[in-house]
Image (cartoon, rainbow, N blue to C red; front, side):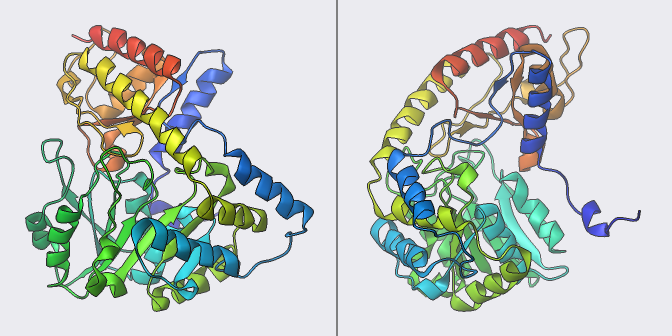
Amino acid sequence: MQLSSILSRFSEPETLKMAKLGRELRAKGIDIIDLSLGEPDFDTPAHIKESAKKAIDDNWSHYTPVPGFPDLRQAICEKLKRDNNLDYKPEEIVSSTGAKQSLANVLLALVDDGDEVIIPTPYWVTYSELVKIARGKVVEVHTSLDSGFKITPAQLEASITPKTKAFLFSSPCNPSGAVYGRKELEALAAVFRKHPQVAIISDEIYEYINYVGKHESIAQFSDLKDRIVIVNGLSKGFAMTGWRLGYIAAPVEIAKACEKLQGQFTSATCSITQKAAVTALTTDLKPSFEMVKEFTRRREKTLELVAGIPGIKVFKPEGAFYIFPDISSYFGKSDGDNLIRNSNDLCMYLLNTAHVSSVMGDAFGEPRCIRFSFANSMPNIEKAWLRIKEALAKLK
């Protein structure tokens, strides 16, 4: 059977691949500690679950409008006003089956064959692959640990060409944990004002998981708002990964285009999830903030443990729940059986020797680094980094 050429344009997400390898080893009885997947290890707050149970009892079990129930889209507008001081109308909102689908909708709606999409590195693994699916060209702009993994206005200006269609970034960033402050966004906005053909896609899924202050959205610059798309969702801030609800806030033209695409792919997301999402977005955020307090403790412990390992350079994450250290000092080393040539080799070495799963930096556009999550219990984090330290000490 001859399969479609679309399958040759993109790769399987390395995050899912590493999780799969970890599960296979775990099935063989090996104690694998998972520091690879980006998922809060908390349960969905009780009041959100109760609203879902009520929605089932109230028979919210039928098809819904493709962009979501009116009360959900209104709730998203209220959240954007409450948390971000942004004014949106329900017709500018489209909810989807996770923020990944939201991103896919936006890129397929905007990008044509050969269009360039600027993506600062490091970036979430799916960004580049979605651009390729849309037949666009990924333009990577490399940041560094020393620059706090943030793109500068000069780098942005230099990367824009007549073929540039969009700029795609996240803040807080997966995998680096970088968070753009208002002044940094304002400097980027000054560049965008000179290039009105460039759409700006701002992934804000980690908005609540912020260790350095108030979240800042680039959509606050009202003169740019008619070409900005905010992507957000419930997975990270509300521990609702399996519920599958993401959303965009966008100019009506883009929102309608995404609705048209989604109408053919999946129609609306789960009706029960939508009702639970209204509760999540409009009620007490205390459970989310309590979760962030625990992530803060784990971040500090992780950084403390990493500091005791020679040869690792690490950026203190300002948001999300990962560290993304430069581990290139181990390239070229060996334990006698395993030669470490790159981050992929080191990830596999740690999986098979330390029995800790991580994700190679190549997947995020930064081959000198590896992503480790601290969305795991404190005992597991401590045990994992002890194993990593012992395994790395064997490399000479």
